[in-house]
Image (cartoon, rainbow, N blue to C red; front, side):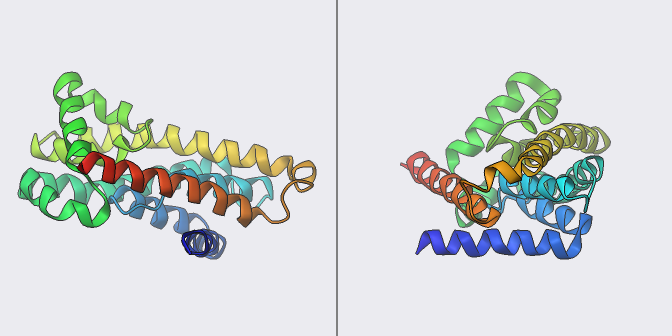
Length: 204
């Protein structure tokens, strides 16, 4: 059942990007950065796959992904600024944000300061939650946007490049995989299962 659900989500992601192009990348990455579990580890490699087909450019998808990350992170920043941690703790469980996720983000922000906004954008999991403590700390908004954009640009570019290289070698890889969405579904399944198990483990 879960595998079928992930396959549907993967097909939807591919449909959005195929139909909307760069706008689809912006939309999906904004959703991912707004703490809704729609992994960039799936979105950007597929966009990179389309780069290999000549339908998009690597610079274009990296810029679109980074823009989406900024758009999705700003609401999380303001949620932290005006609602504070209590509001996030109350409703975060509905998007699989655990107390330990917030503890980690708070600790990293306290230890490393504002530069952690840039660093965290290069790391799985914490990259999504780091906007909350930035909002609570009322970090300078232009600086928050700049760090978010720069870190996200690198993250999206690397993932997009990986998808592009896989696409360039698709002739040899298709011996092992019949359709690209099976690969997407498999990676998605692994990521989502890990994410959910991690969430419930952190809540215990």
